[in-house]
Image 1: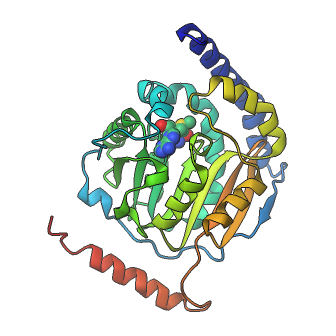
Image 2: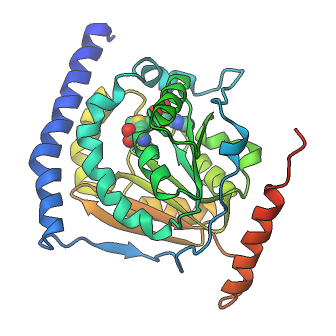
Image 3: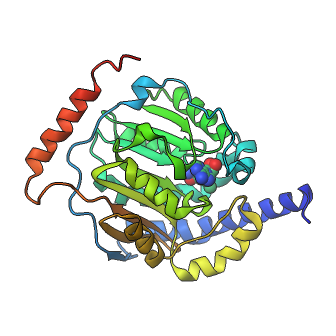
Length: 307
Ligand SMILES: C[S@@+](CC[C@H](N)C(=O)[O-])C[C@H]1O[C@@H](n2cnc3c(N)ncnc32)[C@H](O)[C@@H]1O
């Protein structure tokens, strides 16, 4: 049986190993990458083409306050610790997650027009979300998290930073709100996928929420060597840890969920961005028509909702 003292020891061990890895592996590799001295690899089928036109703001115009669940969910127990530590979480994790997200952005940016409508599925206290919101000034980012504390903390942080193009919704990624269906250009998550209790349900739920041709980016550990080394520590010390995927595992997960293409980009030792693309419903070469379709949807959404 484990008690609060054991949790503190495990948490301390996890944080110090993350900081150690960031200082001695991630940051130095990042510097080498910037100097062109650390080649990275890509595998699988890359998305067909970058999105040229985004769906623009919608949820941020309708929800100024966080939207919270009024009922318990099957998975609340898995995020209890995140709920409790939402105010201090970023201080412990950011030294580790920042270089990972820096590099992930070099991949994600390719799929982010300035008017993209984006979903962060497991936004935590919202640090990454705020960086993405600044990249899509004519678009928006919706932050989803199952922990109510994280949703409230992220909302406060975005408001304090003066960002109006964000909305925050409490939800389980495997059961995203029905109003999200077909409404996003890009869905991403950062270091959250290994906490999803039902990865296949999450992949299907995300696919439903993407527009045709939309892109899903998962930033998480990947290569088998890293997973094998870190899984025992994660299992012991990372609250609500479920499991890591390999690049091949992500590819199978995405294709089985119904994505039409799946790729994996290595970004730093042990970490990558798994990218899935939803099939476009149009024939190749019909981009102009498709962009007109996006504009028509935006015009329809900008009509008063009557609510
Ligand atoms: C390790 S944190 C990452 C937070 C943030 N993306 C970051 O990089 O700092 C994982 C987040 O995923 C959320 N989460 C876990 N399971 C979830 C689920 N089933 N649905 C939605 N969010 C979930 C947790 O509450 C937590 O805030």
